[in-house]
Image 1 (spheres, rainbow, N blue to C red):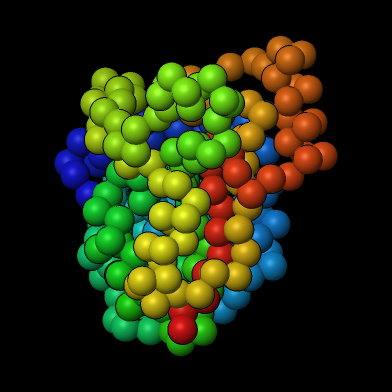
Image 2 (cartoon, rainbow, N blue to C red):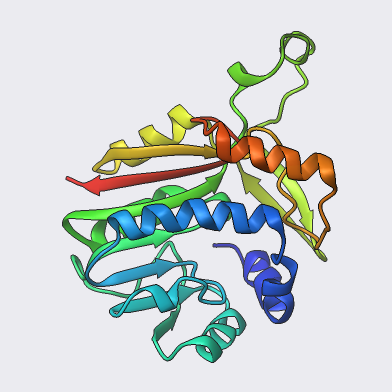
Length: 236
């Protein structure tokens, strides 16, 4: 992962949890949690663990993050094992883990091919991988007029988060699934989040009535499309 990603997360570590204390993030984490409880078991590796949101869920948990400051924040929450390392070079032996979890922007910012290969290597045979990524919001789901005018997202963006400008890779549903299948994974389950609203990742916001209504729609009308994808794979 590039140095500017490390710089970003070192800079935001102290207020990362506060920034994500909003309805949108809670909705995403609820969906993630459902799949973690269903599929994650045994020895767990959390790639891009951040401040250790999920560390308390598992007895045999190892968190890994590119940012040492993020790890310092995680260690305040739980006395688990942590390693400062890059997703593209996981510092553990082949087949060390029963489950790997990799949530939100890790694959959007790093060399995703290397990272996926490394996660496959670190997993035992039949091990589970639970991953969430920001999506490109598949073109087929855009309105007719948007598609006609060609006003849809590119799959690679240069975005500014806090003080850093980062190269941010977005994935279509089909592309994401193929990436993991090519690396030796089988898809078990797939979900889309934020079909009805924009997630607010870069600032703390208080949602108005319109956004709250959209969150209700998210819960009542789950979708395979959206601005965040959550998927579960099995190492074959």
